[in-house]
Image (cartoon, rainbow over all chains, first blue to last red):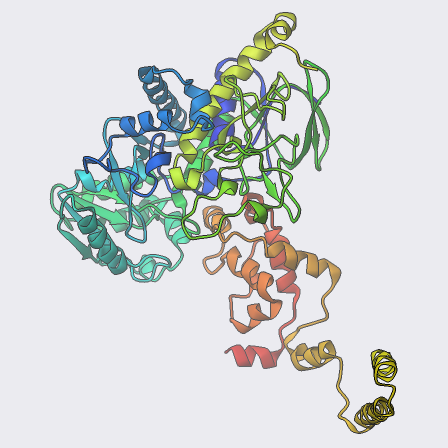
Length: 462
Length: 157
């Protein structure tokens, strides 16, 4: 089997790369072993959230006490670590405008890809959003999926948490208590906050599984019944905080129906696994967008990616038919430990496909030693393992141990890029989107360029 | 053997007959314990004798492998979302089976979880979305293949 560009990984980074390549008119085959971290996302899509230097108080200026705007945090990012993927994506120069424009364009592009699946993206770099999670903690975000963006407490005149007593993992009273404490401890404002308990139709009243309730609400009839139950429940400017159950595939229409009936803004609380419905929706919408764009999808595990010669790479699949594949270019978007892009075995942390060297946030080599050896003791300490990943050049090509591109036609995107800790900085999906688009563009240019001239430009590859 | 070596060391160190008498005493005590003590069965056999009626059998390599793969469960819940989306039975949650298998198959029966065999349509949608690559459907089938005695059913209630 021979393909033009192989994208390995189907999360946000892989999908962004594949869609960018398809828009450039290039044939793409996407290989995936199943969902990864994107499908477990909470629904926020941060590009410039917490900065490395102010990780403990991510959204406040420590000197002036005022909330930092996303674009100010982005500027802090750029002054920060040189190992961060943003240093490669935006360059080290002082053109902040260019970075902002690029972020805005990328988010617009994502919104365009997701629009046919009725999944909206809201947000901007000029304003903060504070979104409550299912446990009641507040989380700052610049961009977010529309289903969770509605709960922004900075935009609310009053808050009401919807109580569904039978539902697993949802305790409206505990959420309200924690949320009240959070609002108070932030010291910025106090909002009226209460718990409302709609009288639900009988078949929803005893449903304990969020997954099944969400699947029920996809049907028009069930959605209308719930809308009737919340009719007139709140006032103008109030925000109704729902558990993440508002439809598996029809979330936009469910939310619209509930908003029309209740007269309030309606949104879902940010959820983490096992109830991360927002991430599941995002993953399904991305899969559909890639399919619609005409990229071929092959399921199964990949075993290795090696150089065939200067212009081609050879991929070996772990199973299935057509195990040996040659590609003109390969985009690695395999993620980290959840996605399978990195492995932490008993003896070493490694990148299983091409054995690329891995670096942590401080630029130290981290592969080849056991995971526990790099761990730091103490709660809250930065863990080098959490920022492990490959290093790339400006064209998103992963570097070998000598600092040269591993192969002129091998690209990397998403969480596989090292030098940042997505859990701490909360920029996992933001980096995935931007780097995926970058890698897709670089791969498209490479495939299009005549081989001769490209080789001359890329310099001394063995 | 160790006792014998201990005797030699003690004998060469002290050169006395005290070591010899110690060795004799421990040797006799050991033999007496062997002869008079209660016979102990193999603990695995004991376990199986006790839980056999509940359908617990000696682990097989294949089942072991399934159990081991189930311990990789991240409890991310994607399988339950996918099961609900494709219209799985109302009482089914694939996580139940995976978690039961990851602990001990016994738990599945003890906890009185919904029996899988009657509700799972074996569509394998859950296995395809599992980020940990667990063959969820095979795990469920394996659990469903365990027989439950009437006595156990009565105990579970």
